[in-house]
Image 1: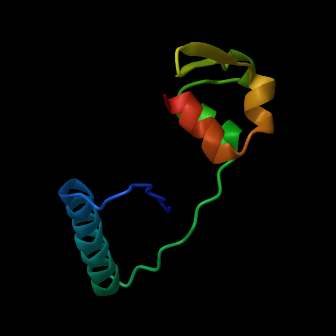
Image 2: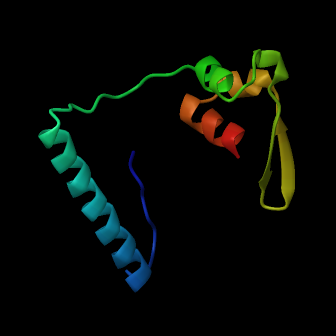
Length: 93
């Protein structure tokens, strides 16, 4: 995935995070080459994600999360209409 960071200044913490991310990426690329692995994007439906989390039917899905001070509830219909990655983030908490 990609991350967009917003900051007025690049702090030591940001530098360290970027450095560690690059170090891990380099290790992963090296490992993949050594073991002849070609990374592939996976495509999962929300149903797959829910099933893997132990939720057998979509009817069982209810996700609560806070936006600021307000708690919001999402029903299965709202989750199914969302971008899958956003819905997965909400479901996983």
